[in-house]
Image 1 (cartoon, rainbow, N blue to C red):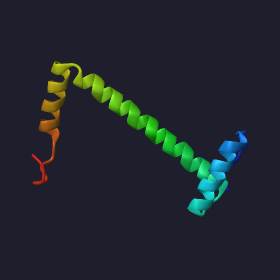
Image 2 (cartoon, one colour):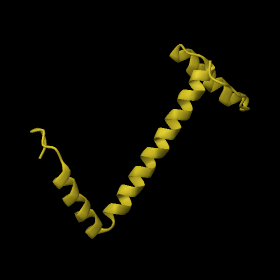
Image 3 (tube, rainbow, N blue to C red):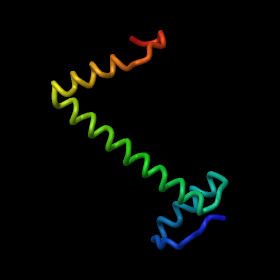
Length: 80
């Protein structure tokens, strides 16, 4: 078993985590781990979206990105 520690949460959060664990047929520890991973992925996706939005707001930088993307794309016959 991995090393563990305690985390204090309010009763409402504990109830939600317990319900998630039961619905997933898993332990509370796994539910917390999965929730932390889901939050990490969400934050990463939001960061990527913000960076793309910033890139799109600069027409020259966006054109450079599209040119590089075309030059490095592998043709699969399904897309453009």
